[in-house]
Length: 188
Image (cartoon, rainbow, N blue to C red; front, side):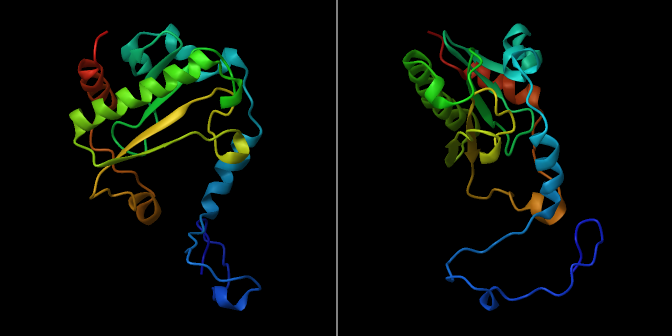
């Protein structure tokens, strides 16, 4: 067996030979991710370099913002898992959910509900992955600014592509998706 860079890893060993309690999970070993982990563990930009602090200062089109609320805003993920992958962010530069105010939490929740309705209407998705990675150790790509992911899912997702081909299949341009979602967002 060889690593992503061609290094010989030796023979694969059956998991049943290791000391542990067997479970129903299959493991997908992704050693290529260590470069991303190491690179991001050394970065901790402040608010001045935070993409979620900069985004509201730009035009909606340039920042991929689909809606601006009073305490939070919604924008497309620049590196989406699927077309329509949205992020809900408070304007305030806070790192974790427990640092958010009650008004920020309420608006993040309300914007998430609206985003789900709009994505269902515009994309015909069948479900969602919704969540927050709190802290770099938990997988947050931008750990210093709270953001919630809303990832639309379809019955026939091709989400195996990143593993098989090192490629993500995103069938629509970000600007096109942003315009469609923004146009469908209810006006209050």
